[in-house]
Amino acid sequence: MAQRRAVRWHIAVFLAPAVLVYTALMIVPLFGTLNLSLFNLSEAGERMFVGLRNFATLFGDPRWSESFWNALGNNAWFFVVHMLVQNPVGVLLAAILSSPRLRMAAFYRTAIFIPTILSFVIVGFVWKLILSPIWGIAPGMLDAVGLKSLFAPWLGKEEYALTTLALVSVWQFVGIPMMLIYAALLSIPDEVIEAAEMDGVTGWSQFWKIKLPLILPSIGIISILTFVGNFNAFDLIYVSQGALAGPDFATDILGTFLYRTFFGFQLQLGDPHMGATIATAMFGIILVGVCFYLFAIQTRLRRYQF
Amino acid sequence: MSQARHSPARSIAAHAILILYTVIALFPVFVIVINSFKSRRAIFADPLALPTPGNFDLVGYQTVLAQGDFFQYFLNSLTVTVGSLFFVLLFGAMAAFALSEYRFKGNTLMGLYLALGIMIPIRLGTVAILQLMVASGLVNTLTALVLVYTAQGIPLAVFILSEFMRSVSADLKNAGRIDGLSEYTIFFRLVLPLVRPAMATVAVFTMIPIWNDLWFPLILAPSEATKTVTLGAQVFIGQFVTNWNAVLAALSLAILPVLVLYLVFSRQLIRGITAGAVK
Image (tube, rainbow over all chains, first blue to last red; front, side):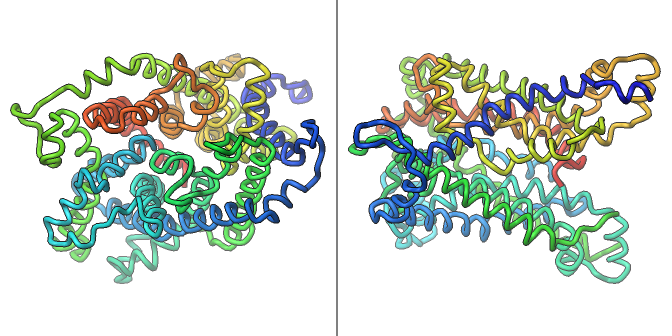
């Protein structure tokens, strides 16, 4: 008992490195960004406190607000495509993979996860080449099945470019929901499945009525990870369309908007204060999303313990 | 039993879907790699044909190796990835052990504080990180990248590893204590070896985004001496955009290392995940 009262230095030693690095490089910079968004340069070029005026500019000045809402809208569509395509496909693949006595399951699992490990530079370029009207793998393949008329330079058309890129991103990341759902499905105890079979619940109805409710918490986690990931996306757009997110800003999302504002491009000079303002707005959006999930969705999910 | 679950038609349908998706997943990679070995004319004439002795050509690889200092980029990526991985695993495991093993005031709060980083991306602090690195003279050094990636990786590592460490038998640890082992010895000698599958999972999830990151190398270390493979490939592609042989060869070279690492770790990865880490 005397031991318990002594200061247990080893706890501090175990915690210190992680907490120090994490605080110094993640928490402090984050607050630094929030703080920076409250300052701007005066006429004389000195930094001064401006309160919320940067936000007033971002939302009030048409030149800024138009870009911001455009980026936010695009970003929302980017997220919607992921939720409608990536997660259902991931769940479907995981459901098939987890069926017992499936041959070569390990091979499929490994192969389907491969796009996830590739860098955005590779993914962006590979698809740019495949969809290119000049090289023509995509038009050639459509021609082979008699659908050549369907081909369009998808990445170059304003109305298709964003959806195309979102689908490329889905192609890349479908492995993550697949793996996590697969793990969740495997952790359902055999007794539950056997009990369902005794009652004559098999096949698809077994999936809908027994397994899906049990993996809902995992689907919730995947949704929020997708949300956070999508609202921070930058690399894929930057690699395939450049910092200008063409054609005509049709693929501009918050990440590219932040990059352009902070570092500048072509004729516009970089502006750290407005950059920090945009980063703060992104922080707010992500925080609202995460809180919505934690308080409105997670608390209503029913969890089962075995 | 259960005829319905294993009927041949159902099984064929399952394989058909999986094969279709596997083809979709691998096709682009396949196209890039086969074309990187072909002559320029063959690349355009028939992009889907396999390289044959008639059109085999390594000119793309020769251009890449002669032009960019890809070996240096590769070494930089490797240094950054291995360095960050080492610190993430060590610091993350230490913190996870403290959180899962000891009861102390503020334990839950500390856990929440560290988990915050899973939800909030480090990129939003870029502005301040850059100022910090400029102030401390670390811009254009690999140290800056290692520091940032360590901070970025710690939250997930702590989260996954502490779940696992809770399942390490308390009897074992107490037996060690009775034998007079210090808390440090118990951690390094008893607990760490037991959570190896979890460490592999964390390693894969930490390694992939670090190896592939474009944002921080572009902002913190864009100089020639500190370029990573990802940034090097991006710049190279920008300059050689019309030299298809070189672009395809550069892409193939960038795919290869991470593919090999993934195949080495993939067995551990699925074991780590299914053992109950991220449910």
